[in-house]
Length: 242
Image (cartoon, rainbow, N blue to C red):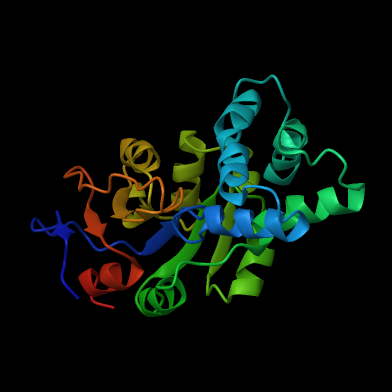
């Protein structure tokens, strides 16, 4: 597979641990959430609902970062956001059981088509872990359902801090007793990667042009500040010799 970008001609040391952002990078949240809400109520615009739910993600986590809320797991934050948008989509008549089921939709997201094969190859030479704002139960349920071959599930819940708090990125290195430069964050979000670089991690950008749906393609242009730039996990495995 063609290498799209490789900023490693200076041969930075190969990372020992690859830490993966999850929502958008590993799993397709937009399609998954749209599918789940339409299964409950076919008349709802699933794509718009998914975008509205995701739009509350950063503002709600900021309430935790600022101290307005004490430490709160992402499952509970997702429920706060959900309760705030149900009426807008004519879903305020859902039963409590239906609301709980819908809130767990984030546990049931499907991986992008390259993910399982790519992770399996990457695992042959690297330790793989999550570094997600998702809570441990969510990430474990997701991995079990989707067959994601993590060596370790790390979460903001472990560090009691949400990305981009440095405690998350540095926490991965500390967990494995490594220098930050021996860890590479793999993500489809340039802001996440920038925060990781500021902590001394290597970074790999993965193109997920349709993270927000095919009607809203993302700019996936290379940023030379990243250690690697790859189309998908299979291309990253090619670059890392896996």
